[in-house]
Image 1: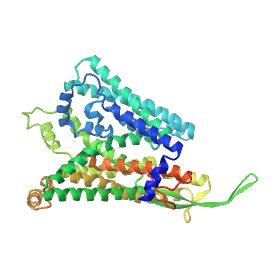
Image 2: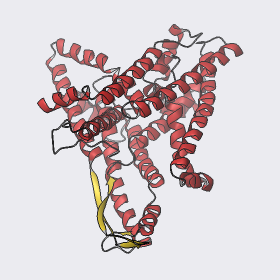
Image 3: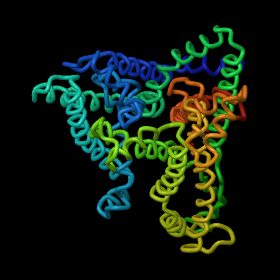
Image 4: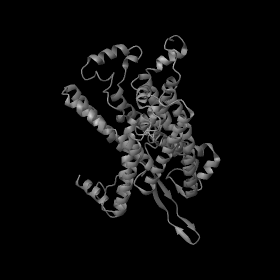
Length: 472
């Protein structure tokens, strides 16, 4: 603890690092200030009423990544969501488009071009999304049904997103850490005080079972955070050897290095994909609900089924976990091409001991990557499901054959009665939020420690020990 406090003090002793930290905090304060400026023409009372009906749809996912801005339709209502979407699509484009792949291979110049295309694509996506948001607002009487009100919402929210994107880039360039990640991080962290107050009130109530529930919740969260830190910093190191080679009159001696492969290379992206896909049915039904008096048509029956298709429902959880595993394999296959890695090793004279260069190396890397991805997918599924079990419970009554009996048993058993209903805490305890919070914190601390060590200061763990972020 003493070394940690000393490292925090050293952060502000280095002029350049102190300037970067204060700059980052200042821009984060600007972002949070904008969250309290509501877009023009919003009927706040009507918005609060409607929001209770759509919290489980894609709008709820938008609200998470906007830091609660979408719930109030502030000028930063969409936050960095359009930028994240554009960035993910641009990551997939080299696989789909040879022209984009050629640009990617141009090095730093190509990277700058792709970043510029990402910005343009963000503006286009934002304009489209804000138009649909404005349409949804007008249909629910949150804004007047006029073209002027719609145009004002589109212009205001698009401008706000572009400004947020600029803030994130400024933090990345002149501050500390990844700016976009820190903006999401700050939006989630802002809800922690209310959660702490909620937990404190349950303890103060004096109910022994409530107190035990809080202790159990805290223990699970600490264990989950420890698991996330361990897995996110874990690496599978593959030994790479480079043969001696002669270039002109110079001879370069062979060297040994390693190729580090993360267990969770996909980060939180697969969970975001899965959550977005599962939110689509609720979004569709909120836009096109059946007649309240209709209970016989196919659309009405499907609607009735999906009314229960949310967190805690066994069918939902099974599909959720399956989608996380599926998207983990899909995303990692896109971002890590074993054929390209093997080809680059061969071009630079690198090889894996006992493995022939070329196709055998690609096959060997593919086998290792498949095993790591399987572990990473199960890890993501567990981290996403465990908090959801605490939040929403697991409605075993929906299970076929054994559901009713098992539900009666759990409800009547002290200490297990919370399983069908959950503990009823707020959403920021969710697995997606935990992955973002812990991952961004690890990256931030890792970068700050690198700055301290570079200037001959001890890191947060003292000399000889280094904290490792997700990207290191």
